[in-house]
Image 1 (cartoon, rainbow, N blue to C red):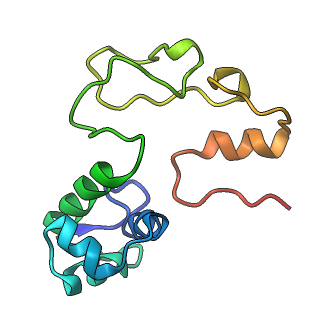
Image 2 (cartoon, rainbow, N blue to C red; image 1 turned 90 degrees about the vertical axis):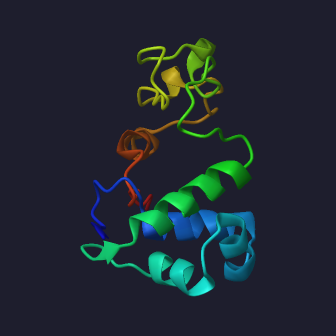
Length: 134
């Protein structure tokens, strides 16, 4: 078992939200991920500071990567970085995951409006709890 913390490689609540965004029922997604429905439900209900099954987590993550549009498996390095200005990768070429610097100036398609709150939210990525804009 692995502990679910902010630094965990898998985020059960975030994965749950990603499944919901795909519009898949637990039954349909469990079939896609190759896990049982109860195992999926147990994983998605995991509370912070509680353990989860790493095998279920890795199968869920692989299925999400496969099913979400515009995503690539994180096990393969990409030669392009579409979300980054000019498609330039900030890290080493062999890095499978690339994260752009925070700020509108680093985005391939910056928004028309950008304020201090937007900047703060962007700086928190990929944190699981984004800041709230009031």
